[in-house]
Length: 474
Ligand code: HEM
Image 1 (spheres, rainbow, N blue to C red):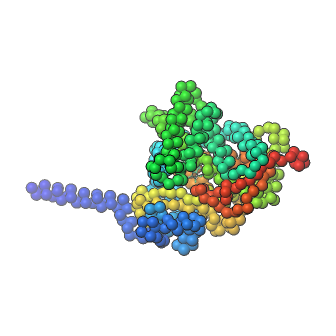
Image 2 (cartoon, protein in one colour):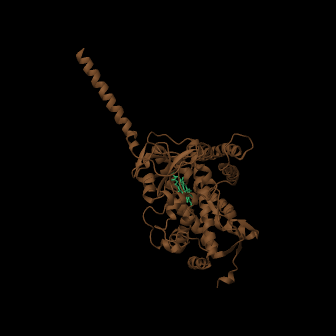
Image 3 (cartoon, protein in one colour):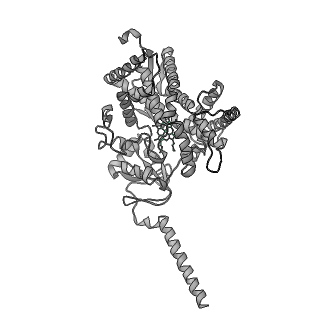
């Protein structure tokens, strides 16, 4: 009896110890740390109204000035910790990425498709990421140059031929959609392409609308279009499988994949990831190229210098008769710096969201489990300590590499953008053909930024393009 009660005591003691250790592992001991400074605003609404009633950058900057590089707030129904220093962004995205998970509203996840890689972490994410990365690697995308050139030239020709002003951002969206389709499917039948474009446009339109199940609303239209996209993609996948072609494009990579248990990707997983990549590629690239055009237009001297760099390549290529080579796109130093500075100035992805999966301690502050965490890329890119005179467009600042972790237009760590080389290549090719053969003028006097939600010049930069007469080049 005596032995039984001693054993019971030992079991009780060990289980209490275990539960204490478990609690500690789950972060209960972090309760001794304080929350970051900041204000949580009104009950329920928090500071959502303050954020959306002004330029979001002013909201973040004002807070950063008041509280420093880590501060708390409450927006869109969620408590958040915002991080405006390179070290903090690196902590969340790189060194301690396992303590945070990607987080998106369910309404958005429904439109893209829940299997898209950027909603995931761990093994599934790593596998999908490898596939996407391989199909967007330099050795793969360099083969796309002639086709990207074809798309860029025919787009520019059509603007010039129209003789009318165009909405630059809207047109660039079409261009980056076509390049996205090319990188995923290679050459695609026109019928499929048109069906994809028509339905994708509806998904895109509904993405930033109010999510509701009311029939006829933009969101509901988008949900219906998304279902149609699944059917169209299903047909494309079946026809590829029937033909048994081993294509080297992204769809080919998805179709030939097998995991360690010999499991293939389902059609649904493939479809969600195709829509995910198209979505990640389109507005971002279109927005950056639109900004490049604006910055070049606003600085005639810089435009002339870029033109001189591109004309030298044009002349080497026998007056543009020979296609650009990969090596040429890698040796356009000034044009490359213009793209980098546009990425910094515009900071298309101003911030990203993660969610703490456990209580986390950072520099003596507590980030409680379940709170959203937002590394503020734009604040870092516009910090005068890292980029002097940050509001000035100055490509020469990229003559030397920026300080580590201060320049993250494509994010950082496990979810960093796998499409960054393709986006830059697309921009360089478009600029080459634009400045060597065309001229343009902005036809709106409105300046400033419009958020939709990515920052673009007001009204999408209305501009008129025309072909430069040959004789004026001598
Ligand atoms: C200038 C254009 C682009 C910019 C500024 C940009 C920016 C970014 C950023 C900041 C992230 C990380 C987001 C995060 O950590 O939450 C990201 C992720 C991603 N981007 Fe891009 N991107 C661009 C173009 C592209 C293109 C052209 C593609 C594909 C063709 C692409 C595909 C992706 C994908 C699939 C992810 C998710 C990666 C993952 O979760 O592992 N992006 N992008």
